Image (cartoon, rainbow, N blue to C red; front, side):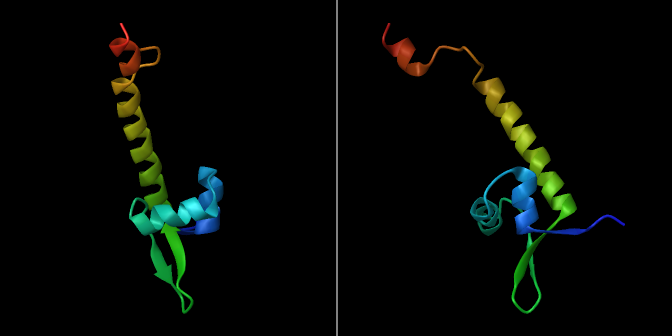
Length: 80
């Protein structure tokens, strides 16, 4: 059976970010998580992590479409 919940340390490894950045994603609400146990350890459901990754792909695609590579920058346009 696949693991349902992932520790933040594993989330940071999967996303190749620091543990602090993973914690910030959870605290900001960008990445849904729960606190479990008496010490309140954070856990991210595997499906939530996958949803976050897919959302980032979509946002990146939108950003790239709005800012095509090699397009003139605003400052270059204003200096003409």
